[in-house]
Image 1 (tube, rainbow over the protein chains, first blue to last red):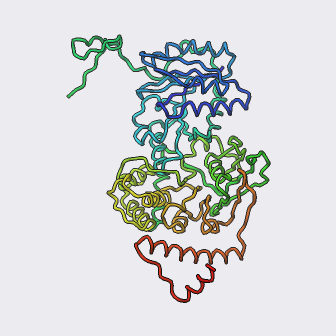
Image 2 (image 1 turned 60 degrees about the horizontal axis):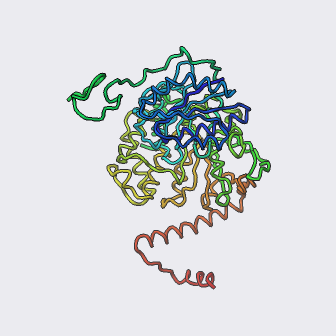
Image 3 (image 1 turned 90 degrees about the vertical axis):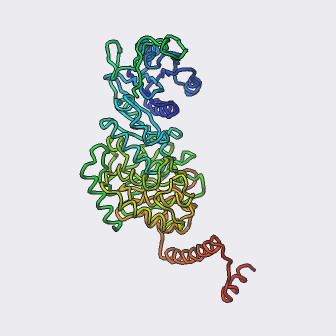
Length: 227
Length: 288
């Protein structure tokens, strides 16, 4: 089974891009399932089910979504193998722009949209900088100049990634992404694989449910601003 | 600085130090291999466009013009609803070309907007930076002058993009695309409702050595093409090559259009229309 990680800011078009890509992969007889990582709630279960795609949702709740991802990815792979999938896609939202679920040796895709602003490629961290392929969405409604500036800045943030433009509404442009997924090697297990970048760290009283403000309530890994 | 010099400078800038944004190859020709229309009927056309060609796309709204532009933009390989295939220089575009097609095709459509909050000067400078043009002042002046000529309502480089009127913003977008995008293929989707001088706009966008596709409902623009694709039900229903008679008709339509433009300008500027006696007779005959 092949494994692909797809990450990107909320509402950047990840689900649409994945669904259009799956439609293309199905034509080639490839069975695809999706694990959707979300935080509070997810309405995507119905969307995937309606498209006939095996889907499993994982809600991180009040845990860091990245930590939740890495603690569950092995079981996700087992689920995919049990479902007899040819390809398993994990979809996760990089909510703090610091998240990066990409794993060494596993195809990592980042989805970002031009409407998020021309400074976004600089603001998004390892999720973009350490991905193999970057999908730019919503390019049809901004000026040619902004599209170019955006793509230029994406190229600057990650010079080695392949960059493609996909229209999430029509699916225009998905073929190169489908090809990339088709050609990625099989994975049997992610046990002992490494993340491409360390996860955001914390272990403080607030991680454990503290809500009061003040030094007296702070314990553990606390970082102070400098003034 | 002339437009030609600016382009030369851009090309030099490109070849020098364009390390991160991947370059496009020379496009001598592009072939569109027909797919199917909305009913699934075969589209029995294969169109080869040489550099320098202007191809006009006409047809009722919903007939498939924008879909064709979309196919070209994504260098479709049978993966779009139309099933069309696009060849570059007679070959299937390599996967590296398809995954780096950032600069190959420039597009200008009615639904595009500026979304950044910057002044006109900062915006053009930013675009110039991504094209690695070292001293953007000249190109800023040139784009501003061109945009002001197109829209007819002057604006300064220090005004914010968000404060531009619809016509000014469209004019700036056209001038910027024409002067700062060296892409060998240009797609234009319905620029006629923009409140700008559309014939000048098209002449600005259509440059020698480029392949230009224009989807339009405007007879003046439609007749400017070297070929006209007629769309129906999502597919090409015919290809028309303008003949001598049509060229003559085009000159007449152009005259009518000039008259129309002058009327529009008079009314826009608070004027009242006056007809001289010789014209009154003609109009009376037309009305009756």
